[in-house]
Length: 130
Image 1 (tube, rainbow, N blue to C red):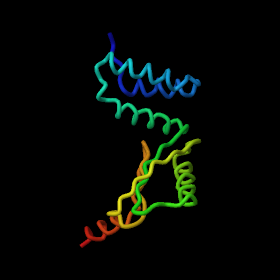
Image 2: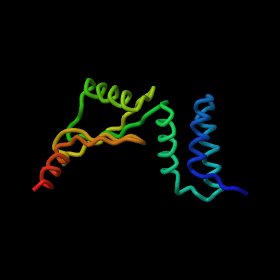
Image 3: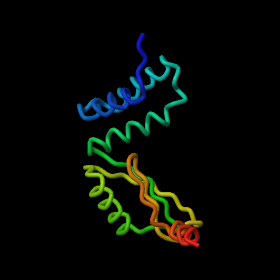
Image 4: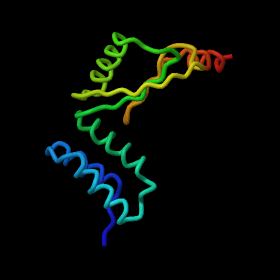
């Protein structure tokens, strides 16, 4: 029996989503494939692969944003628009983390792209110049 790679499973999931297959059915198929191939510990990586595949197809982008302070709805909307423009994705979702050690600014990471515009990063860059 030929084993399926995570990438091929991610493509299957993205194709199924585009075709309108219910998410519960897709999850059952993916779960069965991971159990069959004894790769259940790779679930987190498979989810990342699916996110990459969806972003690659410009269907959806999920961004993990990290800031030092809570952001308001207006800034959140601006971030969503920025990510949509940068990725070309039709749909953008955000997950937010607070990390006071960043001091200020924002770190954004999608499946394919990353931006670090934090004060901590800028200070690190200045410190490395000396």
